[in-house]
Image (cartoon, rainbow, N blue to C red; front, side, top):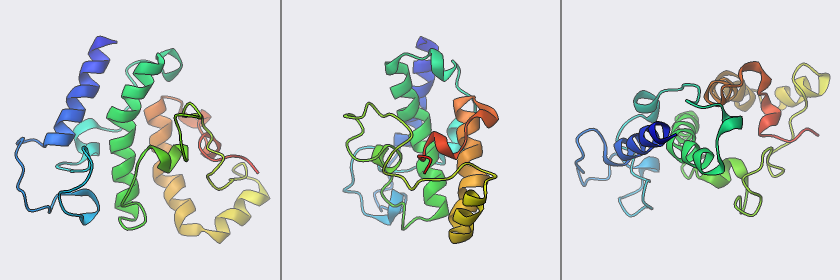
Length: 170
């Protein structure tokens, strides 16, 4: 576990400080295009996907301690998915935090998923799913082609992970 924690912490430092460790001070590399007055970790100096990669966990999720899961979320999932969602729509996802996926007050819910605050998604392949897809083609396509496959890989679950790992079933 120490190696896994070291890798996660190293990636967090690279993301926070950037490859050069410098700060241009012009605000041009800040997530969401805001100035430099954001919260710690708001400054994006490099691509999380390029630095960390979309890879399975070093240890299966089910075998991780709560502390290791938290480190994995903070060190891999959050930077990767912040980038994925902001690349999709920088305005809508300018603020991308734990609550974006886990809902309001995630600590009180112990970060449990699926998040009941997310829109319900019918099981894939059902007529109800196709109807939901027809109502939001762009977002559903993004979720199908980017979010779900990345989650499948990063959790190490493959096709066992579906939309309903995050979204409730109606």
